[in-house]
Length: 547
Ligand code: GLU
Image (cartoon, rainbow, N blue to C red; front, side):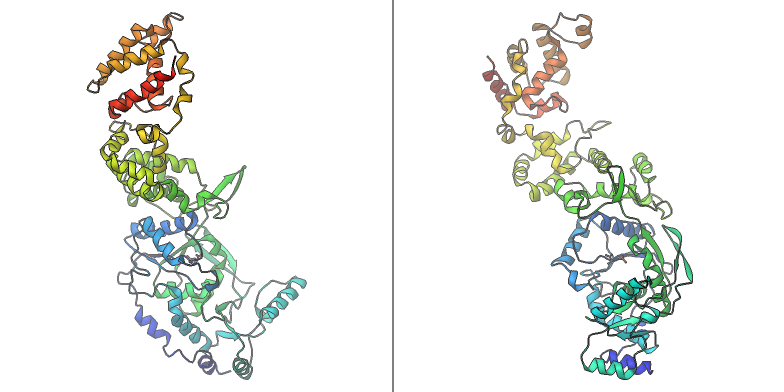
């Protein structure tokens, strides 16, 4: 067989040879440069699993002053989604990834969308054909099904290899005839491997793993002219000089194929880190977090709730290396200063813990300034809650004061975990929301309390916005004395039965009527922020319902 002739027959339009591309994409300048990439397929939305892998790739390249690029793997044209690429780009932007090269951004190693690299793959396929290392295969689906059925019947290994590789040795005349008849075909690797030999790999996460050599004549170029994942991976990561392939561990078992491809193509084998998936515990069973079944796997879920991207990233960092947690809590330093290692990553995969994410986010919010939160809340509500957006735009300083309650102290409140919480926690600070609620039903029990009406009237008369917290408390104590509520709890406890209640109860009455809640942040601060009118109106509303 004249392989040279065959390669020209199969790829008559390819006039470049591989050395052209080797020269076009030379070694990156700094030797030993750390190059990682994120290579999503635009077949759906980015989910927590893919975000996690992207985050690891970016983090390791940043830590090593390396390069992080984006490559869109759109060779499976049937599974492409409309706006798939735009969605990926938007998500990566939202997550503030720093991408050094990629579609839209450009770079010296592009194009970064695989469907635009068709000629490159064809050129390398042509080279393999010309060396007798690849060949056209015309098998139809029916023929492949038949091979499979026979293998199943014989209890043979499934696949296109060895004696089953029907089209491996077609003659030039056969091939020419089939091409003339316009029979569709793929280009397959002529595998040189032996299944009975094993090869050992050193994966950066999984450690030493061993597999039988590849002996499958895998498809390199599909009948639509586009490459398979395997072939594109080898060529792209070689030409783009990726030093560390960080990808999901569903690809681990493909290592023998990739090893053979790098070998026959004459490429240096890169380092691999196969990332275990994020797991979820459910009914005492651990399973992979699923984009189909688990809401918390969807990125939209976090957008809609308004979790800050930084908090999500801190949480993801704790999944990479568990000891990051303690380090971060004690330092609150930039995560780039933490010594992340592949070795410390869980081989079976970390467990997703939503509550932990919530707590991390609460701590994150507790360390922000009120105006920072206000800005975030504004951007969030602009998209997700127009009414809130209008309200907080109208009451900017007021809202910042609300956010400042118990903030400027040694241990600020940890109550907001996401922007959606703001309204849930503080709606009563806005008459717009307060007046809409059926608050009266909440006062039912309250109206039975001894002297409640008198107490509230006395409070309304005594309350002065300008009072310091001490002055305010003194006034409350005076009211307590007047209506036989103990002005300190100790006194109340020592004289059981003598008092109707104590100062805590009186504060609860006020809190209840002003906020409708049994618990709230510092009552004095709340009253200080609310307008006198609102306070008066709320108390009067209560009184009007109490006989
Ligand atoms: N396009 C592949 C995927 O989405 C990428 C795997 C890789 O990172 O090499 O699974």
